[in-house]
Image (cartoon, rainbow, N blue to C red; front, side, top):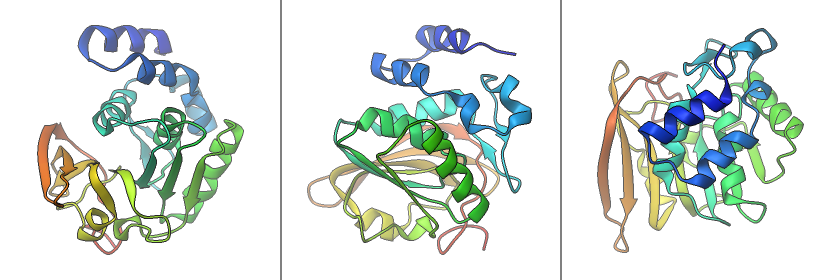
Length: 213
């Protein structure tokens, strides 16, 4: 069993996460976002099973993606793949009460699981929807930031259209077996500038632009 503080110490030595990002990690209880039988393993730096064959990402991956988003207070964020709601919770705390997170999940059991977890954590600035997030969510667009928590061949065009100029999109891009974490920054003219942040392995995206139906 790994402690929360040991993870924080590891990150301070090996990563350049901001004080606010680490403070947020400290405040959000990962054990509230995993099934009961895995609570003792909540701070293992590894993925853990949740429901329907899906996993909650390892803490370091969650923090790397959060940091890559360069979140700002009062921002509006769209998340593709709510999962257990843990990444959602971290993002929601950083954008603050006047910010908003819209998170899309296609698996009904996970929608319920995430909503319950977020409610239990006292988080009120998140809207979890049962939708194909690969198509975005025009009702709430445009977004300052977009995050994909599942692998795609490329950033879906509909998501890019719903990203504000000077907005940032982050997600794993590649094949179903290997991906690179990519950060795209949309300039004032709508052109996407890409940065590559390392190799990862995520579950494939479902929906219109995903690998799986």
